[in-house]
Length: 396
Ligand SMILES: NC(=O)c1ccc[n+]([C@@H]2O[C@H](COP(=O)([O-])OP(=O)(O)OC[C@H]3O[C@@H](n4cnc5c(N)ncnc54)[C@H](O)[C@@H]3O)[C@@H](O)[C@H]2O)c1
Image (cartoon, rainbow, N blue to C red; front, side, top):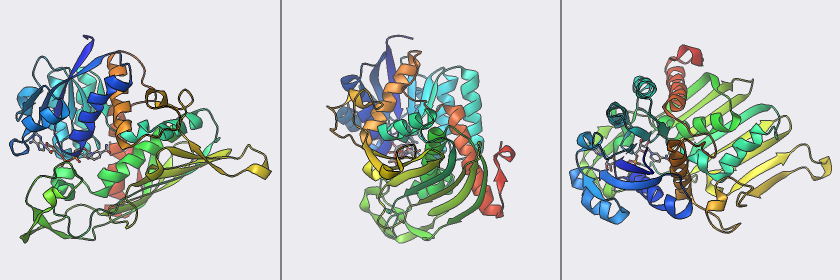
């Protein structure tokens, strides 16, 4: 591969902005082994991709992703569309011999995810899924500490992803439509904590049980415009007259078992008032525990049970020491904290490392890996629907 990686970005909403920022920032803060070229962004005609390209530094704009993914100047197709479009865009990119990085969840359906994973295997190109929270330095450090045995054998995993933006005034954007999204808080939020706990513990989920889902707001006003880069305000306008049916969950809870014997609870919700982006976990091991909450993303809490009993206690570690903490030395002097967008730039750096044949700083999910998370999403849906435990070995 040439010393550059020409990127085509498909989609220009919320994630379109985070990815554009990441591709633009990565050569400024890191020394990537391949330089990204922000070749073309594709969006919908009504979104004015030309203006987006100009604002974010893309060389070209397009409203035709089908031709773009075949363009011979493109090396990497970056997919940031609603979930139902991931499979068709990614499979077209792989068929054209391009590497592909796709937003999460990998697909709106298990079938789509399976096909994407198979296509990736056959295409023999690199694939990536943007489970970006793995690349928050605090989460990457948690992964390293577990791997080093600092908390011993993992016994309990407690994970939550709670938001509160989905009140009654929010219109029926694609996130509330099963055909477009696949599921609600399950695929949107629980997918992140499933991936994050698989990553931190290094273990797979083997069984899901006791899943319940609820849709509190069953009808929403049909939207009148694009989301404009926000999660869901769809231009802030809902048409008063026309209502549509919400076909996904607002909240999901479930229990799980991990290989290795740990037991786990998960909770994800979009109407957990007061929790704006509480995405985190507590993991208890035989020698210590770890706790993370994205609302304080620069901190990892560590309880070291090997310390003298007199001084044992939860210690908030500021994960901001270059050299000691992953990704940090690329950014600011020690203790000058970072934010949401940095996780995406850290991921863009790791993608460029992998495309150059190097190892990422911490493991990066490819389509096979993200398919495992999708299998867990499916097991949760089945457990909730059939009110019974589901072994992952039953979900193919
Ligand atoms: N990693 C994260 O933390 C995170 C956060 C939010 C969303 N996401 C994921 O990112 C993806 C996109 O979500 P979003 O919040 O950016 O949505 P969004 O509604 O803000 O943007 C979606 C964009 O998709 C594009 N699009 C839709 N139909 C298209 C078509 N036919 N042709 C070309 N482009 C088309 C449009 O540009 C639109 O703006 C989803 O899969 C979502 O689950 C991930």
